[in-house]
Length: 509
Image (cartoon, rainbow, N blue to C red; front, side, top):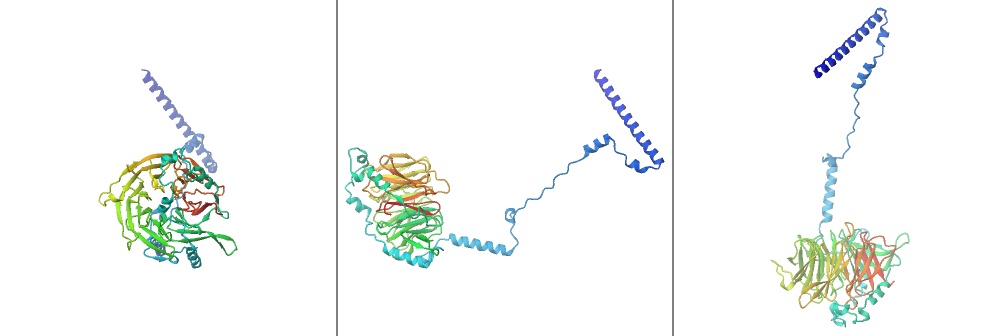
């Protein structure tokens, strides 16, 4: 009943509302008719709309949408090929130049053939004169040094013990020598290559100091530390020389252990070359269409070298054989970052890989079909480098991100055992060359190595107890010296950074 009453009331209200509206419209029409009879149409036309009409108009008014301008895009972003024939021709020329630039250089060529734009023929002639002055009489073989060394049979355990006291083998002697080092007085760093430096080397001569570096783009930079140049404005500049023997990254470089007039370089372009300092020519040692070489190392007698590749293979090449013949062994399933030959027992080699393993090999037992390793060591992270010590009793491994490992090798058991695990920040990131801890190859000194530091410095660390011997730093160094090495016969350290600049610490200034 209540619902029926409510519906009756609402209907009566609606009817009353309609009657009122009809009455109102009739009044408006009557008033307009009166005005027309009085001949006053203008007033009728100018009558203002009622309040309700205004409200209805306001409700029905729609907001105009803002005009959206189309987003401007180039033809390249829209995926539309340009119609201009000139643009197509230029694009084709740029592509051909890029392919030509990345193509591997073939054959033997003179220094002038691969000289960079900033190295004139006059500078190349000057470099040849410098190379003739190199004195290699003090670059004796590592084995000869070991035979002459009184501490040749000294084991790691003896060095750790307190009763073994000898000045040459003490950490105090090494610290004393390192503290004498200072930067080159004229330039804290010198631009040697156009791209990021991946590897460095020092010629073993004690009388003529020649530093070299390989960069990301296949460029080889040389720096004569004992010479200077004067430019057109009369400014004194360092004597540097640039050449492009490779078309891609130079991954490693080293001088032959028995012929220091040959500088070998491995590259991602699939070749290993050497610069003959006497002839001033670049020659091929290995050329491969399948291997991109990441590192290399020589056996002590200098007859054979080993080159690792991105594909997990190691190429063995005999330099006495004509041509670039080599044998490939599949030693890892992923990229091999480093290969190193034992300087005392050259039948032993060690490899590191992105598969997070370190493998010990005896080359006498290798087979092409199924090479078998003597031992495999696993790590939590990838290993960026692994090197034998100068006495062949220890292995130095640089692990990405967190630490540096020192492993002992037992000749009787032919096994590697953990000796030290040193915490070290090796997380170099994308724009800095990965750290590679390197030995001081003088076997007469306390065993120690160096490695770059993310705080724009270089750490020198003991391989016996892991003690930080010294940290080489200077306020003028503005980039991380990621790649470093010791001079073979002088108290000198060479470093290279991602800007293509070299840094030298020495006590011979």
